[in-house]
Image 1: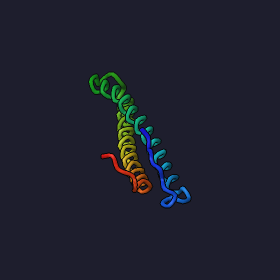
Image 2: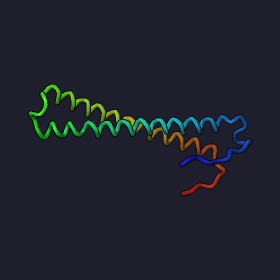
Image 3: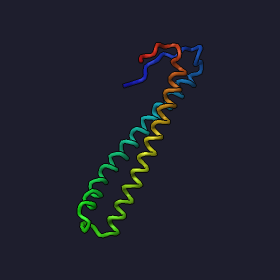
Image 4: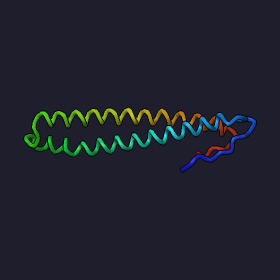
Amino acid sequence: MGIVFDPSPERDPDGSKLRSVLDAHFSLERAQHHRSLLVHWVAALALPVWLAALRPGWLAPATGRTLLAAWALSAVAAVAAILREWRLRVRRDVETADIAAGLPRNR
């Protein structure tokens, strides 16, 4: 999926709006990648946490607490990444709408 538009020289003579759109788009792509990594990390940590809960003596208590703390911290980081991605998606949409105001919208 890509962004396709033809900015008019009257609306964006120096190309600054186009640079803003591209900057917002690339920032969103990086945020999507970070979110994906964190969500996968949370899922990977969930398996040993689940096994430790299923078999209480499987791990030493300190190791189990550390594992659970790592999972919780990763889950919080994933939520923060999701919120950051949402904020950057809104920014990208605003920037795109500003430069492509004259183009028909596909809804």
